[in-house]
Image (cartoon, rainbow, N blue to C red; front, side):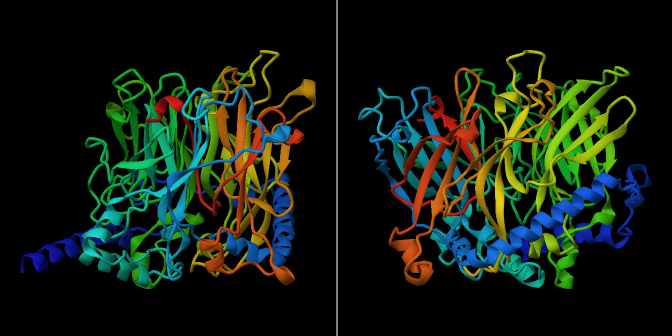
Length: 619
């Protein structure tokens, strides 16, 4: 009877969390906010410029070309999704010393390359339902161990969900395989609550966050798990569903609390900033700022302060954010989350351009708690921003006003469900905000010819522009992976229905350089993987002591059998027939090709985000 009563209470909590939002939504017209104080103004679509029209035409043409290329490569694309078993015991990496590309550069930093991604979901679930698996490659100093031998390993993040499955048996019902339908998702939430007292599994499969030497494995709609990487290459989970000493509110019975997948660390103060969202209760977003109380870079994630963003009236998916010297950049874009859609058999997340889009600036300095609701908002064109590049402040030379410049990848889904059912191409964009006048100065696509994903910059340059007056400075730049093909269907999992093959690393200029005849948005470097190899990681920065960087990317090749047939799923998963290779590039000279290549003992499938962990942070 006690067990029955506790489950009834839990189910009531779930219904309350959904109905709490239902009450708001029921009385709120979809195109207007529930409070006139915080209403958004919807930008007039007739303000579209000739350049925007031209850019859109180019984008559509590039997308069509990529879709036509995919038809003969769909089997290869599917093969890259096949899950791999854990390789907990570190395996030595054999380097090819018979040529220059097989030798480790003398100035390559010591540490570990980490790649996180979903793994092990059933064929009836979505790819993103898979548990987080970390792939690790160690780069020890030459003096460590057996003459600095490198190791590869992989291991699941031992989340609370995995622990509950081991304790009680069975598995969580996935939540993403049914998209774009909503009723199966609703049933899975109730089923999981009854069996595990947790509505959705904390897969922690999206991004890695490092602060003060402590590493978190994150997904945005669950508390993170803390992990550690040993110098011998072993991967350990220290604490599942960490609440960071109370920093993560426990106000969601379905998820157990939230911390955003992405955050930013200020290179000046060392503070770490995350903008997290809630899909059920107000405030629908909050800004958390963490510091390292030890001052020794080995005790981060101490909460300095947390500020609720009260004037977001509809829950929206906030996957990333940005920081400047004085502001946190908050993205209120119309990838809305309306839980009541599930009762209409619709997925709760849909693209809703009628809800408007705006960029918010929250002051970083001073007492944020006293500045609740003090967010300066700038209305902009609707779209979707999943990943930012950088943001910084500058002085307008004409009138002396302060401007904030934001660079990010923006996509524009073709319909409300298209973000879930079809792939939406993303392109590098720039927004300029005038703080003094409170107006959006400009927003534009910097390069409509290049479809890219997963942008990164050297984190030592976050919140700043490196295009200074120093003649030695190179144009402000970023890296991303380039899209070669778009298509589907995916047969390994239920979702996504379609996706992309990535075949190159692209370097963009983010500022003009008249001396070199470079304009912002220009491609100033490109590395194309060898034929048949596809990127399965984002570009990963390995910082050098002289201020420059190496850029790493892992490529995977699916060997074709007789008659160009792709190996079976069972063969790919168990027989180690798929190959993976690490390509190390000079960040200043992508066009020159790789400076170092080496093969891994086991292949790496598709995943999400990665990080380079400094040797001093390994245990």
